Amino acid sequence: MFLNQIPVVKAEMLIRMPVAEVFEAFVDPQITTKFWFTKSSGRLEAGKNVRWEWEMYGVADELYVKEIEPDKRISVQSSDGSTIDWVFTARADNETFVTITSAGFVGNGDEIVSQAIDSMGGYTIVLCGLKMYLEHGVTPQFVADKSPDAHVR
Image (cartoon, rainbow, N blue to C red; front, side):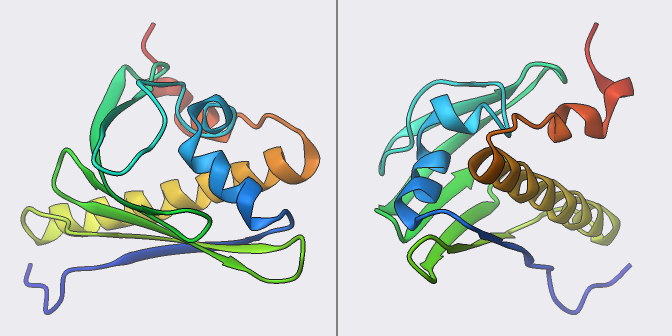
């Protein structure tokens, strides 16, 4: 399979909360573990390495935090070399539009397309979980429930 262009994944969602709270939900693992991964080695800070774990699946990722602009942008590089960028755009006083972009997928055409599709679905679930958690105070189980047969026993 030949690709004319390597896919760039984008997932977006309006969160009806102030930008500072939405931004903090991604840099503070005490919050992020309520809607995404289950364990983290620490807070996101520019120039630091952080480990995220999804214990139910027995998987983890090592991230390098490239840049942080408080309340505006987060940029990380994943252990597979792909990049993930979050952009936080304040709308009204209590609204934030979050855009997550992922790029840099590698492999043959089929592998790249598979990674892009998986990333698109994953980041969409993350944003839905964030919305439920911040707007409604509900701790969603979307990530764990996406593939219950893949849980480590």
